Image 1 (cartoon, rainbow, N blue to C red):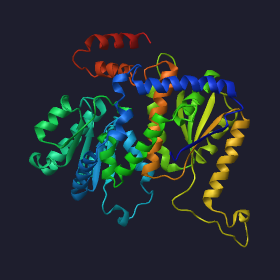
Image 2: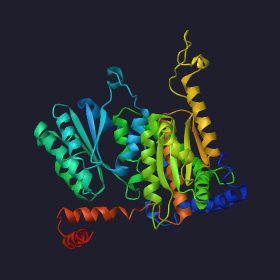
Image 3: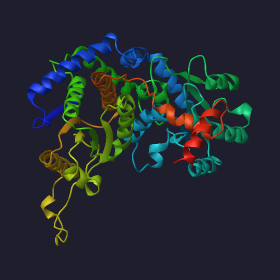
Image 4: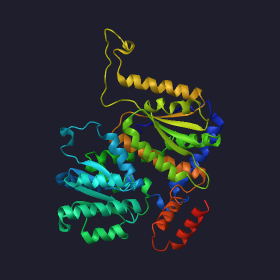
Amino acid sequence: MSNLKISDRFVKPFLSTSQLEIELEKAEKARQTVLNRTGLGKEFLGWVDLPSQTKAEDLQNIRKAAEMIQSHSQYLVVVGIGGSYLGARAVIEALTPEFSTPETQKKTVKILYAGHHLDADYHFRLLAFLENKEFSVNVISKSGTTTEPAIAFRLLLSLLERKYGKENIKNRVFATTDKAKGALKHLADEYCFPTFVIPDDVGGRYSVFTPVGLLPIAAAGFSINKLIDGAKQMESELKTTSTKEGNLASLYAAIRNGLYAIGKTTEIFVSYNPSLGYVSEWWKQLFGESEGKTGKGIFPASVQFTTDLHSMGQYIQDGERKLLETVIKVETPKQDVYLTEKTDDNDGLNYLAGKKLSEVNQNAMLGTLIAHKDGGVPCLEITMPIINEETLGELLYFYEFSCAISGYMLGVNPFDQPGVEDYKNNMFALLGKKGFEKRKSEILSHLETT
């Protein structure tokens, strides 16, 4: 049984039982579309069975590569953009202590990231930093020609060759790419780099349970077996539990689509745990890229409470009433802090003496939920018992399945991203790429009249 729980107690004032029942029926049909592979983008549904079909030997091969990286490198640079790095980063950031010590770093490498933007200052500083460090690179791209990671990898490869010599870097570069074709695959073959395969039927934003996510997570020192076990548990539950029996993914998709139908067009991912910051970034890409098509889709946003209650809190409480919130509640911290009594009580906090800081945080959460509901914002609660590999595996798979259901309910293909190509083509034209001459003249003409 899943460790995750969903509560709609702060949604009920906005969505009647009869409305929810209608949406749940739609969600069940969409769930069957996913399971039967009869919908748009059905050729990219390989992620559905991925946890249960992951073989022990595949995980062992990934762990061996991670151990090789750990044996000779202080740092692993993960080169990728979008789904090629966000899933791994979400898990790594959620599990890595904010304040590392030499003891916690003995058998792991520090994960750095490149190729997820084009900022010159960042990449200059990264290359300068690595000049005197022992490092490896995990470059992740199905084609090898995506602009941002391709540029970053070219820069890093040049540094590796200068630092170690071309003949000595084949165990310092790990390519996660297509099994047979593409520029990165050909380069990996030329250099004899170890390679891992991105399955043909799994798109980038659904790829965290492939080597795309698993190799960096393993190199960072976390258990990919437990991560897959959590995902496998959630996979089994979401496949076998009908909506009437309480399918979590269908319930979430039904609630958010029901609220969308009454004008709640922005969903805010809310966490009271800073370590989940990159889970929210991964979630935003998953839903934004999957649903934002043909003029449709809930806009995915995120806030970190209680921090953002002192910035965005005013808008959420009193701004436009187009918002809904999904709050991730973590029941138990890994460590806790007790508040003590002070004789002078200058700060007026003695009433909290003897309480745990987690208790204060939980009550801040409940108080905010009540205030936002009273202010016209429906709030859905998703509870996980603790943050670890297993529960993160459950949470990420839950969101993948929910997103597929929600996309089909919306009437879009949840697995393509046609709009992403527009900015790329304009960029190629402006940079003078061959074959884009006509588009460049059109852009320049447009700029002259703007």
